Image 1 (cartoon, rainbow, N blue to C red):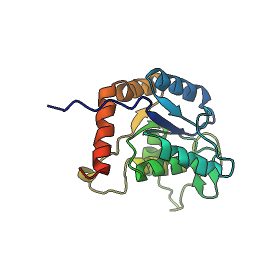
Image 2: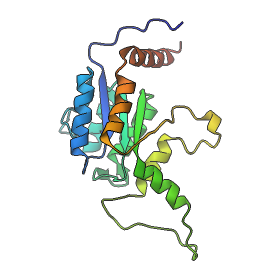
Image 3: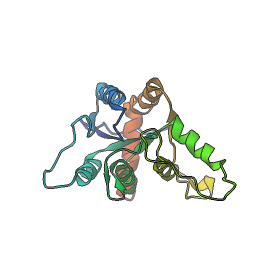
Image 4: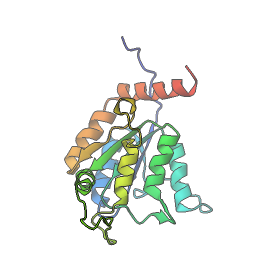
Length: 202
């Protein structure tokens, strides 16, 4: 029998990491849904992360990852404008959440999954590598993010843990997943207690 989880902290902070362009309305509805479920949502588009004026945008976003209790990452075909050199803010947020072993969940747009599978099947007769011009429809680098969260680098599928990425196409599909994961406070408390026990070496 599962022990009764400790009571959730009065205010559990969840960070929503995502590119924003063309996704503003959906992000606002996701933030509203999580707020309705009783969470404090950290999200740059929503304006709810702390901004230290002496830090870069990337560093402020990474500070928010450190601050959050839970992390929800959304992978879209659009890679975003938040790029500093070779670093993409959303991707760095995701990597930081994984590095810090924050309890995390990922949503991935259907087009990213389709694009990855489709491009695997395309072979140019010349042997040249396929490249895409800059565009706002699909960025090949989003496949790198997806392969990171599904732990594609771990060859043995049996050894992959924490690699669930829920595919979505419509907003209502995201809402089903979000409600299923975060609507049950006992479940979230259990996940957080498990993480705390791991941190304390229990």
